[in-house]
Amino acid sequence: MNIDWQNLGFGYMKTDYRFVSNFKDGKWDEGKMTTDDKVVINESAGVLQYAQTCFEGMKAYRTIDNRVVCFRPDLNASRMADSCRRLEMPVFPENRFIEAVKQVVEKNIDYVPPYGSGASLYLRPYMFGSNPVLGVKPATEFEFRIFASPVGPYFKGGAKPIILRVPDFDRAAPLGTGHVKAGLNYAMSLHAIVDAHNQGYNENMYLDSATRTKIEETGGANIIFVTKDNKVVTPKSPTILPSITRRSLMVVAEKYLGLKTEEREIHIEELKDFKECALCGTAAVLSPVGKVADHGKVIEFPSGMEKPGEITQKLYDTLTGIQMGKIEPPEGWIYEIKPSAVSV
Ligand SMILES: *Cc1c(COP(=O)(O)O)cnc(C)c1O
Image (cartoon, rainbow, N blue to C red; front, side, top):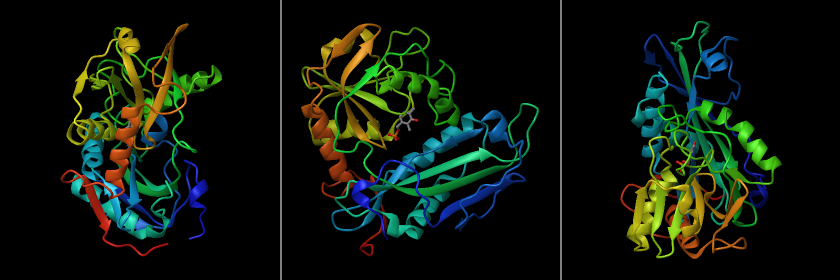
């Protein structure tokens, strides 16, 4: 494989095989692996008109002992099932989801970057309404696909602290779709992120849209904070997307680092009381936050703008150590695709 693993960015690269299954007449077909990267659908397909689509994001890694593994794919499968139910789409059975992930990684095994490169094979399961819809109603035919793309570390040259701002936009309505991985959540966040970048900020830190007083998450990552007495705290809200990385980090904090953890409502006024802050998600694992700008007021975390805070760094090292096979994982976290893959 002629890929410069060290210099991979976080972007799409076409690989050899992807999985496709279609839902028609009330049932999923048996599905297949294909080399065809084109999706052909009717001009009035449900996804094109009314954005009936959801997705997942996960990674396959090469471990220190050259196994190829996935991290907690069962949680991606069940979260996608939740997204489908909320969006009136048929669930792709969770056991078949995991089996399809395995096939896609196996068929593209040479695209799994070597251990130590910092790169990984990103997997993108997604589903969309595929038959023509014009009156507003759910589609009746759907396509489920998983493609793979090798990606470099989300932040090149290590994790430099970033700057967030509290935007004048909302991400999720109180009883809306904030808790599911719907494409529509991202479509409406694009203007806010472009605007944030234009103003010199890296990401938006959204508040709850009902009261605009409580911290929720960014457009595509959950948030954790560290208190001055080393407690790891994360916002609790029914409109936050339940990040698998965040849920795993809370376990790592408690079980591996012996820290207290708390999932609770966090008021914007509390920002100044924390000593560390970081974003978490599959793409970057953890990205340290140095500052938050809130309408002319700037909150600087004591961890500063030079490097991640001490607890953030420990959490990062432990979780990535588990993923890379350097640290004994909790039961069921590591799903082995290939015991000892052919080296690249
Ligand atoms: C996908 C996503 C996350 C991160 O979830 P992980 O399972 O950790 O990758 C966080 N917030 C939003 C809005 C997301 O869509």
